[in-house]
Each structure stands twice: as structure tokens, then as C-alpha cells.
Length: 109
Image 1 (tube, rainbow, N blue to C red):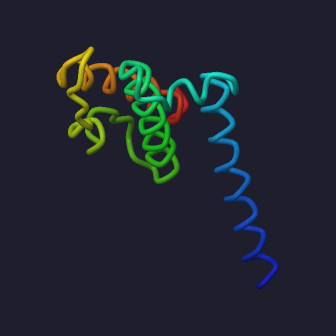
Image 2 (image 1 turned 45 degrees about the horizontal axis):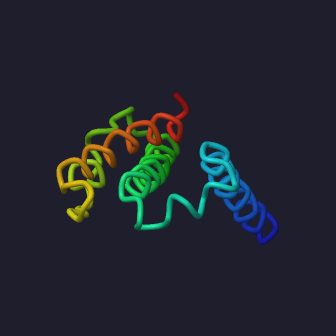
């Protein structure tokens, strides 16, 4: 019984590690830091939208939910940025577009 429990934990770890690797492959290793810099709000919104969508899509697939990228809270309540050079609505639109792309990949479409 204990061995079975450890096997499930190891499998979950490998599965989650694979998700991170697939998300990394989308942007490439060298570009990861560029998406985290707030000096480019468009890239920042695209990076985090994709990451959030990928995670939610993976979770929905794993838990048997139907394909529903626009029903998750992260999509509906996209984070706000609202600083120059882009406004709040533009930031949300970029985030949401990237979220849907990430959700599709995470869900396996």
C-alpha cells in the first residue's frame, strides 16, 4: 500500500514537470526572463495569460471538465495593469488571447 502511494506521488510529479516543460517549449528557455519583465507590459500579459491558461486547461482536462476556456475565473477576471504604454483594456485583451492559446495547449487541443 505504501509503495502504491509513493508511485502515485512520483507519477503526479512527473506529470506536473511535463506540463512545465511543454510551457517552456512554447516560449523557449532563453525568452523566459523577457516575459517576466514589467518593462514590456504586452509581453508580460502574454506570458502570464498563456501560463494561467495552460495551467487551467491542464487542470480541466485532468479533472474531466469539458473544454471551456472562457468560463474560468482567470479569463473572466483578467488581471489589470493599466500603465503606459498600454491601457488596462488592451492589457486584458492581450492576457485573454494568450490565456485561450495556453488553455488550448494545456487541454490538449
